[in-house]
Length: 85
Image (tube, rainbow, N blue to C red; front, side, top):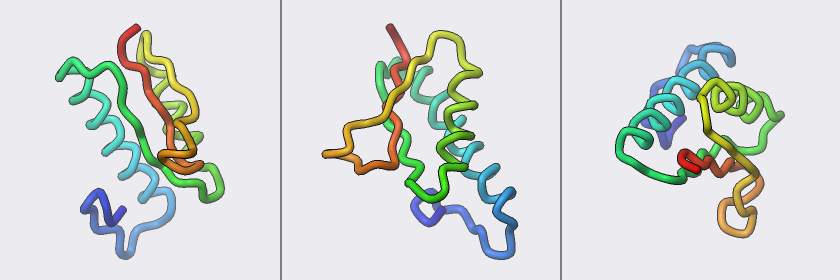
């Protein structure tokens, strides 16, 4: 949340996840419009909730594929998103 520049004080966990998902959707949409082929979404490890929600979001896009990002570069908590095939 801090890296996104979002104020999460006083928010519930569910509200925080929704804020993070909104930021992820905006990033994916802007990246697609910019013609990017791949992006990396860093969601962290935690209890896996945000990762699951990010994957649900990505599944809602037609033609997007995703996989675990290279842990040597990003750690365990990142997803590599293929925007164009």
